Image 1 (cartoon, rainbow, N blue to C red):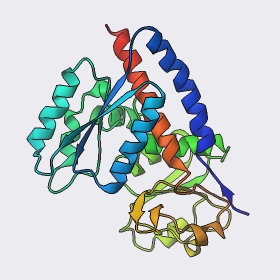
Image 2 (cartoon, one colour):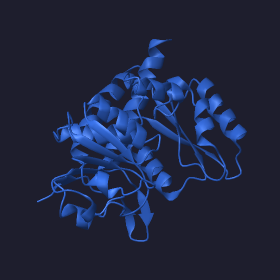
Image 3 (cartoon, rainbow, N blue to C red):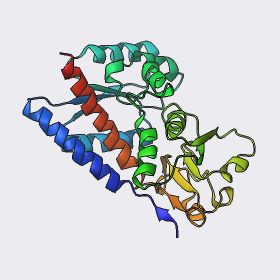
Image 4 (cartoon, rainbow, N blue to C red):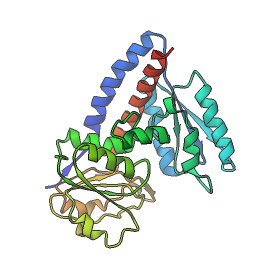
Length: 283
């Protein structure tokens, strides 16, 4: 029987630790603040923002949306991000992605203030992760590894396949798995004969934004599957895994909803607390 890797038990543990840290800050009269910059956020991003706001309020963290209209230019975004970097009342800055239209995320992330980059999107933080010295790490990728560790899924020496090459899930997840001594392969939606790789994997982390992309006939029995996809459909939120067919073959799978989502939120807010503490230490 397939084991479901629910995120709530891990998220509750992270939240309990964060609550203690938040209380210490509150006793010093400090309330951390996360600024979330959005440009016509898509439904999945909007859902994430709502979850952040609820969880932040429970931990004494102010989550404030900084919305820009669909007509915002790269210059508009850069100016706003740099202004937040100089705003002493803001401790963390998050840029909601994907960005609409012709906005070039690869250049815009350069303007996220490094010390407030709680999602680890700036090239500086990406570089530290690639060098094996992570500072701020993209929270969904971090959540995938933490979930594997929480449920004691062996990673050392395991054949791990990442499906997806985004800078917020696929690439950082691959680097984190390498730190765990896994043997890592990266595939994506344009990989030819992807079944060759999925059937060989012992661990699969998928985040491509395509509902039901990974099916049961693509995997080997006993594989562990971490679903990092969020797709808003007429039937509700679903992941990138066809849960019915995959559950008949896999040894363990993280459900959507109920898997990575709550852990991702908890880890991002933990990063806000870390950023706040570091900034206080430099004053």
